[in-house]
Image (tube, rainbow, N blue to C red; front, side, top):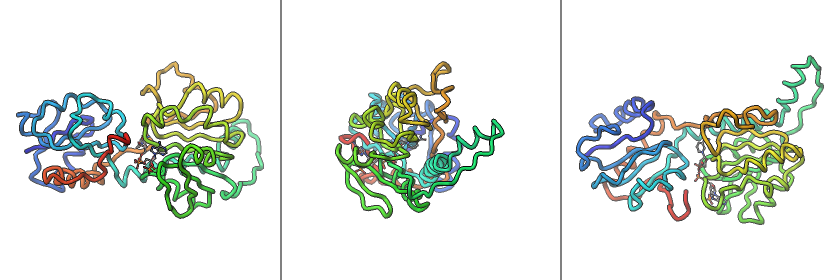
Length: 309
Ligand code: NAP
């Protein structure tokens, strides 16, 4: 019995330490040195294509160290009949909330205008706007969207959220469905995307979503690159519908050197660093899922393949 680590080799040592500290006798093997294929009963995968996991006849379950699993669900080398769990990790949630709050506050407090004014030695006498006058629409009210939205509501922002199922979260107005999306976006000054990438959400950040926003709205996108219709964003920046976009994720990663986002004055590029899973906080749930997989129990945060997240 052994766990196969098939995630990023650069992080292998940190995961081995974190898991070894919690389960000293655990046998962890590292791709591609798995020994006898029949020994492997659990696999840890992440952002990279893990290779063919169908060669392990006794594999009980697969654990992602990433919260988003769209790339894994599309990977034909992952056995479809084994349960797949996505990562929910307090460290990851906290860092995503930091990312969102950082950019919401910077936008609400006119950070870009103040920095530009400093560059031209201009004393720009701006009164801060009260947060309650700034509507933030959060698409996706799951683990990450709910946490970020709750923090923003705590800071006084007018927070709306959109999800498949209606939510009852203090300080957040909940919207669902196609009509609800329009209402959620209507007049919003800041749009935050924290949706999973599925067939239903691909391309959702396009002209139709931008049209109801307040003039000069800000987009904070930290979900997946293919949510965004890049040409529509460039057009919305050109027209002034959107004044600024903070983008952490891209259709092609790394973002190609000649991509217009790198140099666009209205775009801030961050290289898919909004939030990462920390082995120190993520290892416990992985080990619990290993136990559940061996016992034939449902996993924590098991992916619903029909829903795609
Ligand atoms: P989650 O807990 O599964 O939440 C997903 C949310 O999206 C849920 O509220 C869900 O609604 C909603 N949703 C899904 N499909 C929808 C649809 N068709 N219409 C309306 N709402 C829909 O996921 P999470 O842990 O918060 O993570 C969200 C995403 O963040 C990940 O999938 C990944 O793409 C991205 N991410 C990015 C980074 C980064 O570093 N940039 C790091 C981690 C994650 P219900 O609640 O009703 O199901």
